[in-house]
Image 1 (spheres, rainbow, N blue to C red):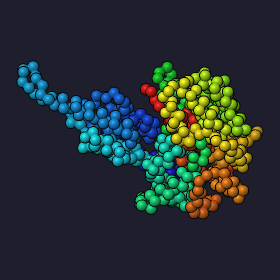
Image 2: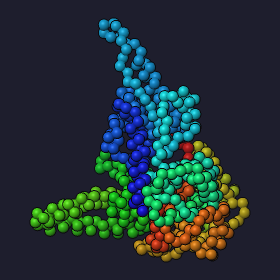
Image 3: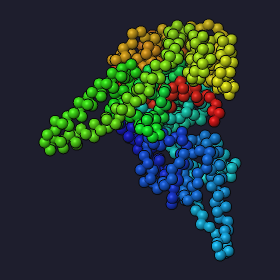
Length: 579
């Protein structure tokens, strides 16, 4: 089923992209919002794009490219007002150039003759769909008649056979505000998933965001008719993970291979930048289906990545040595056809993963990194935050995202008083710049920077009730999800564990300690496929934790995330860029 859903979603997404690229006639230019380049690359290579008649490819930037020789210009972008305004500037520039070019010119004989000007058509494909605001912006710029606005309905990006991402920047839109537009987009994406796998017969979840989402999803499901699903066999169950119930986990330091690569190298739509061999960095696709080495490394605690890479290198060397054992033409032909292609893929991937692991190892050897990591672990275990360390880090201008994340963790745990928070606000702004007053305000709005007015034991009670701190974690052959954060069991995954196999005691603890109404639809049971939807984003370490739950509890689990997040991405999303 997983591969059926995976290939169905890939097929549908490529069909949508094909429709987009087939727009217009003649010479075509494709201009992509750079934030969407990973999504497009995941679905189509340059050959696919050229097959559809695209001769010019560029990224959207303030600098207007000269596309005057192209008959059709296709823009792919999100429905972001600032991006749409930039596209409007491009089109205005192109129209002005066309008007100038259509004026009379003088030939060498003094006779005026009109120049040859290419008549252009403009298309804007909004991913996943356009909004009324997009059309209003173009209408105000008198461009609505000039630009053909359409939807590029790529709702879900399959990253792995068991991991789908909406790649929708949702944390700051959903966590603090439950933005109705964001909820609409997410509901549309889940309806698209239902079209591929069949309807969800049972739903479990908790929290205000999960409740709001389920209300909108139910209304939209009733109002829409869908094409016949690809795979209707079996039962589909849905678990809603409300990010507002667990803001702590994404601010923690992940300790899985993929989690740390994402933290330090920034995985975008399943691609990571790697060394280009003396040239500019190149994109490398992380895929458990296509890369056997990554398949082994992806969910490992980083502490065992080094020995695993050594073992894989020895195995690869041994397999490569078997070429010498092929003495007859039959043996050589069998080796070339059966083993050589896979060996070549492994030989290409192994040094890349070694390079990524070395880069991560160097980063986590940093003294300040380890001080922050230790402060996180002490904070969660004892609800005590090292205030002197935060002061020291700000004085040394240490990574602002890490400092902010640590302060936010203290606020969420409930151990930062108002006087201390005000002091840190002044120090942070003085150390990193006054523009971070806006950053601070946004994090306050998100509920991440809130002082504790009265002492509370909520975190301590939650930590004990759900067994969130685990001693003596086994990282080589993990039997508890706490291996993903080296001793901390992510609250989100503990909730998934409860809904997969509920107990009366855990149900009472969750009802007593976590806010928001429960979401319960249908008989959840124990049979059938399980889809875990992270509303507000998921970390790669949480994905690894859910995979472990699926293996140990005998459940067929697929993770669906609104986006992939980490503490750096969350903090950067609140920051104001000065460039």
